[in-house]
Image (tube, rainbow, N blue to C red; front, side):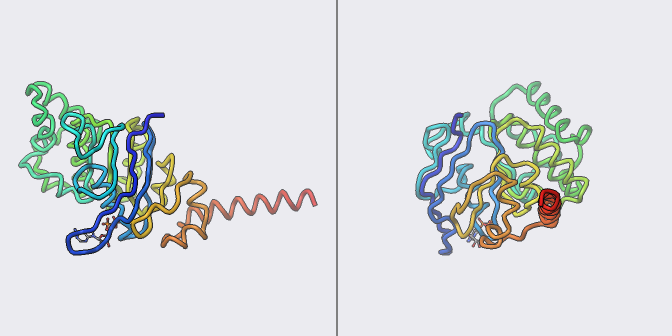
Length: 257
Ligand code: ADP
């Protein structure tokens, strides 16, 4: 399988002196959904920003075999980034202008731009929102509009920073379903273990600036000792799953004894 990202020995220190990444090694494969899981301050956002080329860390980030730092447009524009705060992504007077901004940067004809905006808004369920002001949308709608600004670029890779934070249960469910319907390569940073369970093909645990474990979601999320060691709490759903599993095991063991 093609490696989309190959990260080796990534280190990043913020100007104020805090070392946020200290030797991250990671691979991301074509078409997979990789969740970077870790407690607050683990370095998740810093890692995602590094994959997007928005920070210049020490070490190596290869994108499809080439150094990310030297990558030119349009290759670079294949990587879409969803900021944790939609207000960082929305800056125009109308939703249309915001979603059209990227395609216009690509120099596409206005007809194609309009087509891309329509398609992106329809994918996120915001048809008819073109003339609305992004700043008057609900938080959930803002997040979807921000996602549309990413999708209108037709990225091959999506980097999503805490994409479910502050969403109500229904908006969260819609987002999860949408993620599962996307075939693009995805890297999601979150501390939401349930999200990891629902959308990840693989989970990378990040702790104090290092990838400390990589595994399948069902393996990582049901391992209470592992989660505790790296500052995470096993969520209720995982406890229940585990409890059910154990109860069944006990029952079967009882039958055969
Ligand atoms: P996470 O996304 O896992 O919560 P971050 O990547 O945001 O972690 O932060 C990693 C570390 O870097 C934290 O200790 C945080 O305080 C620090 N940090 C993050 N952003 C900045 C910044 N702009 N300036 C200084 N330190 C920062």
